[in-house]
Image (cartoon, rainbow over all chains, first blue to last red; front, side, top):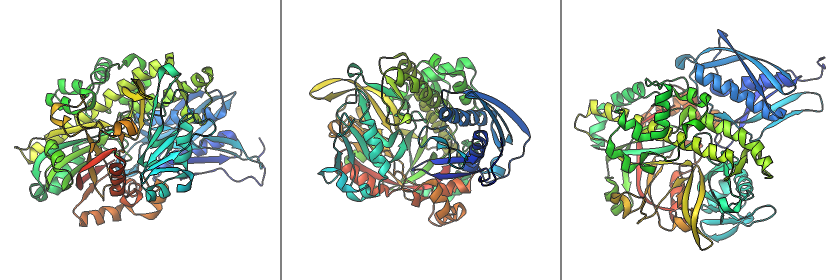
Length: 145
Length: 476
């Protein structure tokens, strides 16, 4: 896909929620918005750099693109929990609401990463996946921590 | 929130009249300041829950309420199976059966002071805490299922706890109706190394001093004495509960559509009580409840061992263990009829009043201990359930101070290292793997816990028994 010159560069941020935290990613494609939101999820936990030592692949399906976004985040949260890892790079492809994701990272090191919290799950609250007038995709929701 | 949006019934009761699709009113218990400071989203979320099928009497909201996901945190709603009532996974939340237990030590503050630092270090080293920490207990599939069925009773049978604790745990330490077969392999995999771990976020283990007694009779019944030391543990069902919440929330979305339920918010995904999905969810959720009860029993055992090292004669006896993210079948009187209903408490504590037959003999005269976790700087409270809570809130009360500020804002306002230093100057030792985590949990990010418990008392939900001040806080 051609990236328009006036389109903002891919990026991510977190945003406030009562007790938990919202994450938002954006980019020229839906896939990049999902990748950026995943970086925001890691950003909620740590400010440290993550080494790309091990890669993990996941797949998920959903009835619509918003639920697919929640499924993607929950797949990351699951892999973090069972592998005791933290991820710093993500690559996503989406075809017909089927997502293939690759994430790379390293084992959690409490001294190095000093993780501030533990994500319990991605929620449907403030869930929004949309393409703006300038073509930029954004994906966001609240994470329960 | 603007108080003028409510019908003010009395100084601490604020009613949202049913409009539009709302089937019942919403009732918030709080004083005027707490209402003014409460997030607008609490109003919206309360009204949304009141739209769900089969909701009974009213949706109740506790004084510590804040913006949640689907349900407000601090929300209580009950559903009648015979009226098309529903079960909502979001109405319980991701941390199934998250709760608090308080143990008496019989020690004085003066006993603790000489070893306070060593005690803090030892608790921090031996109780796994924070993201990435794993326990020493590894469960194989058979033991996993035994734990999910047995709860705290299972933990005690394995040597992590004492039999007399069971009387002081909700459900006598073991939730009936748990179905390990309804818990996915992924949920079990998330849990196999997490027994006896504290977790993160607002979870903690604190050594606390009793600083003030408000109700002598109840304090005597509870064994709380001024200047004595207690241990309080706040945590839940860990990865297993989180995964169950995640999976059933997803499964309830199509179930709601299939049942023709219009969801005002997808996070309120629910299914009729009389449905296959709800049946499976209840089996899994009850298993997760047992996981939480076992987890707190094991951490309590660790606390006993560590205290035993410093104080060989000290005996840690359990005051009470109560959960605040639950869905239970309970018998209540609604519209003149007493019948079983499905009570969801999302960030709200069951608060049985004096005389309730579910309470153990020693507590029955004064009512159930209601354990209120405050922030690490301001302290916590022990309340006693009031008989009037039965009519006011299906016998429920608040569960904590409630956040007044987002993590995002707290991180901008405070430095974790500075908070740790300031609290140390005040005699409160914090141990945490993350200075940033401490900043996000800064005392100033919470509501005034004193105002919250006063509002709960004035509303008739529970009465104050004692105030606790932290001496040591182990924080994920």
